[in-house]
Structures are given as structure tokens and as C-alpha cells.
Length: 325
Image 1 (cartoon, one colour):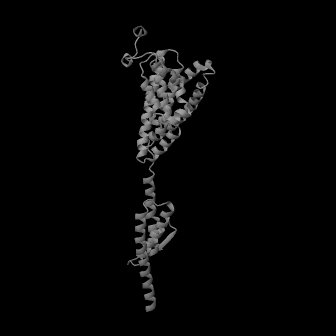
Image 2 (tube, rainbow, N blue to C red):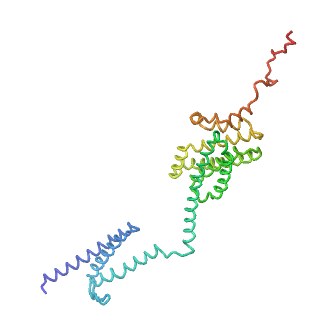
Image 3 (cartoon, rainbow, N blue to C red):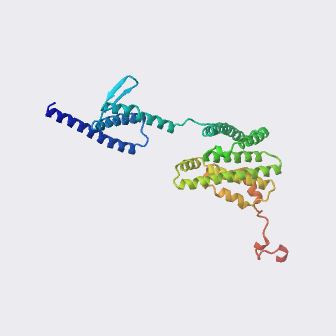
């Protein structure tokens, strides 16, 4: 072999070694940068790693021969390439797949899967109840012209209250929880308004107020979270504002107080007015909220008669006609 050929072969081995070192360093950087490479990226990394290993092996002394599956025979740098490509990385990738996707065990995943299925089922049931709720409210709004529907409406509302109460809040999102308590407040108000016995009216009105308080507390909670830049809470709070949900809940609160006052419960005029005054005037005017017969009757009952003059406020110049004579 001539000196020129020896130099040429030496430079080829040096170039292969340099290629291997450079790409090994590049692969090290890639692995550190891509924490979770895709399958395609893994294949490319495996090929380049095998080539880089073969380049480095070209400068190593000694000989190496392998036979893979009785079909492939190779020696030297090619043998190193086959070992790296077919055995080391492939085994590593397979083990990584097993680690990332372990075989589900009954103790780990079944309870979670069952809980998710149960939650989906409960939400579906809840949505059907919401549809029935709107039918009942529509029927309630017709009672002035169709009083014969009062018993049916009352029974439907009470029945739906029992079904909605079977839905646990923990299976619902915050938005659905607020809606659920608003629906319960509305249904209990309808039940109270369509019940004849005063004692039962007061009981249902109290239950309506309790549901309204829960809904209002949840709304305030969402409002605080939205102010702290919580994106989900901002979305829910935008829906609350759009649907005037806080104003609706407050209105049923005030109507239930009116029912209690008309049924003989000790309620002050200020309690009703406080709730109504928390509703923006534009909403009260737009929807004629102050003209509701329950509110009008309750406020009239709680307003002192103008013919009754408090002795403390009596004008001293006013004297009986007999004294004037």
C-alpha cells in the first residue's frame, strides 16, 4: 500500500471519528432539550446515534464481528452500528414506552374511571332536570290566566325539588352548582307561592332563602377568584353577569320574604327593601320587578297607615275643635 493510500485511509478514519464525536455531542444537546420526543424524533435520534457510534468505533483498535438473526453478518464499525441501532436504543425505547404507559391495574385506574363515568352520567341526568325546570317555570307564568294548573304546578315543582336534591354538588362544576341552587330557590318559591297553608308557605319560603344564600355565596366566591385572574372563574363570572343570575337569586330572596310577611311571619319592610335595593335600578325598571303583586301587597302591609299619627310627631298647634271653641 502506498504512502498516499495510507494517509487517505487515516484521514477517513479521523473524519469518521470527528463525525461521531460531533454528532454525539449534538445528540446530547437534543436529548437535554427535547424531554419527550415524538416517535419520529426517536427514530432519527436512534439512527444518528448508531452512525455516530460507528464513526467513533472506526478509530478504536481491535476487531469485532457479529451475526444478527442469522441473516446479517458485519464487522468493525458496521458491527457497532448494528449493535447500537438494533439492541441498545431499541430496548431503551421499548422500556420507556412501558414506563410511560404501564398496564392499568384495577387498584389504580378503575376507581378513577368509574368516578368519571358516574360524573358524566350525573351531569346528563342533571341536564334533563334543567329542561323540566324550565317547563315548570313556563307553566307557573300562566297561572294568572289558568288557575286550574296551580295544583299540578305545585306538585311538579315539589317533585322536581326532590330529584334535584339527589344531585351532589361535588359532581358538578362551580357554574352548575350555582345554577343548581338557583333552580332549587326558584322551585321552592313556586311551591311556596302555590301552597294554600300559611305554615307550609313559610317553611318553603325559608328553604328558598337558604338556597338563595348558598347561590349568592358561590357567586361571590367566583367573583373573588375572577378578580385574581383565574381564567375559569372569569368565564363563569361573565356567564353570571350575562344571565343576571345574581339579580335573579336576590329577587327570589325578596319574594320569599314577602310571602313570609303575608303569611304572618315577623318580617320588616327594611328586610325586603334591602334585597330589592341590591338589584340595579335598570334591571328593576326593565323587568318591572317592583310591580310584582307579592311585593306590592307585602310592602303595603308593612307600611304604617298615613291616618295613624305618632303622638311623638303630633303638631302642638293642632288642638281639638272643642278647645278651639
